[in-house]
Image (tube, rainbow, N blue to C red):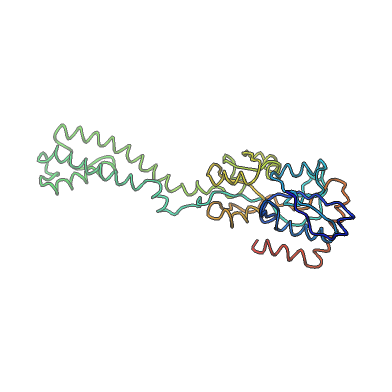
Length: 344
């Protein structure tokens, strides 16, 4: 998709249009009707081109890595997006003065905040287990009353009073592992008592494990507080980016994606535990399109600087730097930055 820049007719006659590659990354680059339309980098580049008095055409790319490779191969003159200035890229590209301070942020699925105690207990199924236990205790109480009524004085003969006695007996057996008062007299009641004691041991163990799980689920569900917590997680990263180089340099396992947006779709589908992205892009997405579906986890890390990329040795770099200095000095840069990063 080509979008012609607005420059003077005289400039069109003097110079060919600059081929400017970009990629959709809100709030750096917004795309409307299939073409770059606005955004921090888009407006900044238009101002640079106006001051250079050079025509240009935007070419929208879909993959970050392809965009830089085409610049390297001479298929473009400029890359204006959220390109981090790195030592590795400086080996085969040239960069303008930094236009923005950025870094990396982690996105995780929304709703993974640590739940409260009662929410954790409710979602864990503990209350259902308690209800089932109460029902089993009632059944056990009735059986023991039928087996033992009239055989010993502790279990009273009247139904309600007797079932209450046997219910208490069953409860004490489960929670304490034994009963210090009168033992059952009839053989069938004794067999049932032994079985109930054994079953009580298993029940207490299962119930304790369930409660422990409920109380620790919050810690487990929101365990990503910085990039060091990503070990063993399903992490998505777009290939050909500074995020991928960071993961490789730090031995972080990840699932590669052709584009950041593809990784975001997998994150929202709960196929990933986290996605690493440009700090400004991640923050903007969490507040807008991804609101209620994803959230930021942990602080900014691996800080870097964003610049405009040109081919190595290109005379455009010095001209772009001079234009940038004028844009900063007259306050135009501050106005553009404020427009897109006022709440940052």
